[in-house]
Image (tube, rainbow, N blue to C red; front, top):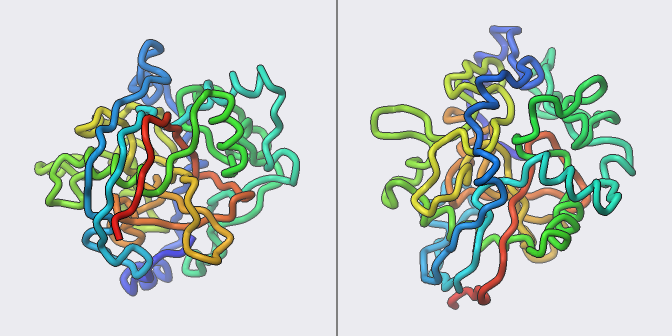
Length: 303
C-alpha cells in the first residue's frame, strides 16, 4: 500500500513509542451484537442503471481525471462477505486459500520504527482467513466480521460458488457514490454533520495511536454502521474491497476500493469513493476483503 506522507505524523512518530494495533483488541460481545441479524445476512441491494462522474475531486494522481461513466443496473451484496459465509463455501467445496497454500499473508503490526512504512507490515506465515491475527488466533466472535487474508483469486472462487461475480471498479465506485449521504461532500461517508463517525477508520494519529473513537481497533462486524442511501453497508472503511479491474494498463495488479480500518483523516484519506489502490491478484492482507455482485446488464465508460 502506498500512502501520502505527512510531516506532522512523522514528527509525532519520532516522539512516541506508543502504537495501538488491531491485534490488541479482540472482538467484544458488544461489538458483535451490533452486526446484521441472520435474516439480513447475504442480502443484495438493487443498484439502478445511470451515469456518474468517476474520479471526482481527485486527491491522488491515480484517481483522476474525472470522466463520465454510464453504468447498467446490477445487484450488490449489501455487506462485505463474512467469515461465516466464506466458511460455508470452504465447508462445501474444500477450497484452500492461497495464503494457506503459499505460506501466510501480510499483517499490520506494532513497530519499533513506525516512521518507516515497510516496518508496519510483515508476512505472517500463520495469518490466514481462519487465523486472522496469526498463530493462536481463530474466528471466535468474528463470524460476522468481513473475511480477510483472501486474494482476488480466492474471492473469484467464492463468487463463482455463490452464483455471483466480482464487481468492476466502475460498478463499485458508482454504487458507493450513490450511497453517499451528501453527494457534494466526498467525506460524508465517514462523518455526519454533527461529527459522529459513519465508518470504521483509524481515529487518532496514524500509525502511532488509534483512539478507537469509532469503537473498533480492527475490523468491525458487518452492519455496525448505518447503511448508505443505497442500503449497502461499509462501502467506506472497515476493509478494502477487491474489484475485478486492473489498476492501470500493463500493471499486473487489481484495483481495491473503499479504504479500511487503517485509513486515517491525517494520513491515508483513501476512504473516499474516488480513492483507489492496487494489490497483486495472488496476494492477501489483514485489511482487504470483498463483496460480490450479480449481473443485470453491462457497464461501459463513455469516451
